[in-house]
Length: 199
Image (cartoon, rainbow, N blue to C red):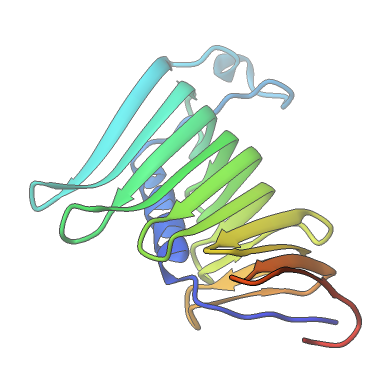
């Protein structure tokens, strides 16, 4: 079992802010789930919508989506083609992100992003790409699937690995599966493969 750790404060704060906006908005796109007859037709359909969350007259989060649908008797949210910006206390963009599908269970505080996920931490100049990420608001854990690849880019370093997790408590991230990476220096480029031993 392998583990790599590093700072991920702004990414985690961005994920938390992104999740928080959906606590104000209960909706779902129920394409494959069986539902009660009264829930088959959405109460509200939002197309090409944009929501902005404010605190003390300053924007803290902006979320845009191609489609959001709201049904009765549910506290679950689904969104399609979602993008967001989170802002710091000075009104500067802190995290940018997008995904193809969003699932949010506001009661359990579970938030899942699917399909072509892209996250960028502006202060740390760090990019994340993944096909699946889950945020647990109760434990403050951001995780990928065990075999799903997460790509991280910072400066001249690129890292890909499986079993990604980030903690909002310890402010670190780790990979528990195989890792590959590239580090570019001023003189040469090195490919580093992570095997059974930590490097």
